[in-house]
Image 1 (cartoon, rainbow, N blue to C red):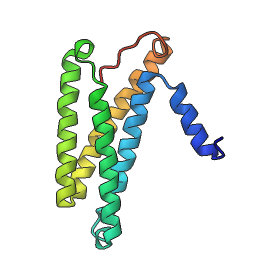
Image 2: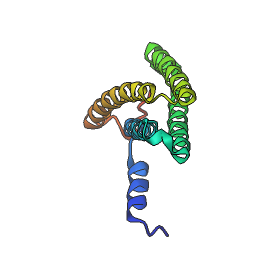
Image 3: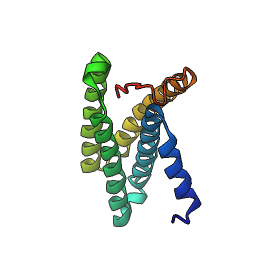
Length: 144
């Protein structure tokens, strides 16, 4: 039995979310982890070795999320959009890897900005799909 109300809330939120809402949640977490990584890579924070490890962990989480987003693409239904998103996700992973090697917070912030734009677009699409009754249980195909 889960005694942590926040964890229980998050679990319920994920279990009851539609496909578009789940994509939005992935982007939200990726943006949050990019913010963490960039903060840990700031010149002052970088002086502490533990912060470098925290930055590495945060960027690893972002890369895991991007990989999950890549795996969710449906190239048959998504067509050009799915192909474009795949290319963008490859770019994100490459930039994050390079940012991690160079300890470059600006590169992380750049990826974060693009991910936040995608999050906003997905939030609108998910809201519209839900408003049209198409989000839950109707076989809505998520192309990204």
